[in-house]
Image (cartoon, rainbow, N blue to C red; front, side):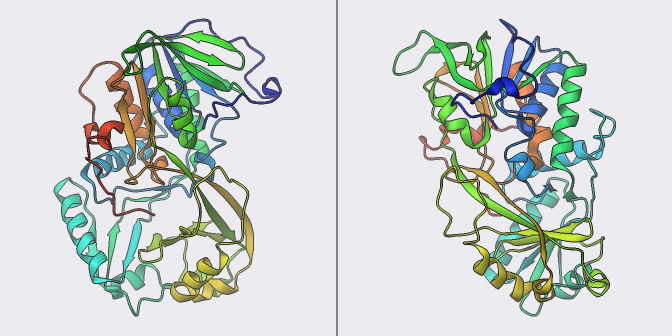
Length: 411
């Protein structure tokens, strides 16, 4: 995540003691999973000198606040393809780039309680199956066997894919960053990017990227990749490019250790379980349970401090779906930012108005799990290759053209 506003006392942060290179081939802005994956895949492909810049520390933004879920269950074919390709990369992460990420594949279980949602998930499962993802619809009794703690008296069906799961977001970022360095990339933290510099053009565009201006000096580069999460809109605007990304706070709780009785109904083998109607989700996390949900009254903005405003809604959902969890204490709590677009789908592509400004942002809550595949896609776009996944429908220009596309399987 990268803030275009200069960072105070950035020299106190690691990575700033060494001077920045005066010129590189590609600058990647943002040290979360997207930026780290992009830097790794570019460097691995021999795409010239790659520089990754992060205003704070690696994985300090939305990535470190994520629940860590990884899945291929989506309603949009592009998201299915990105999710499935990323799942394979997570499974092979110990070999490439070579790092332990604590991957647990107990599956994702979506509990469906309305006919309208059931129709959507029936179509989604059929589409996933046609694309090689062996998800399936379960009966309420089958769902209850996978997650005994869940109340299923109103569940009509459940969608399940056994290869889905969760892993440790910070480890993924560190693994990609280490891999990028091994392939010759330069990674600098504590460096705030203030603006993308563009030469030529007019109010209608047509300019060329020439580099970035940072709190530590200017770096010349013919290509800049914006992977700055919730801050991407402001940064891209300095180059005259509109990336419609809005920050929205989301919060997560981790319970205290479960009692032996609760462990029987919430075993370590339980899947990531989502109550579709309320968006309540949970999975086992160490001796406890990690859980959260969306809060409909949350207003957009850069608020990252924890708030208890959502607790009434959260606990009502917990009481309804997982009543036994209501009596367990809270051990940890934190908040972070979703980077939301108007249709809750990502922005991936290359700006049409400015030469060689690429972007990967606006993932609306499913960015972490798509990080590996998106890194490959940006590599291919930079090298003018056919991308491993056709992401042209996710161009930022789709909104002006009236081609917004909704993703229904949002958590």
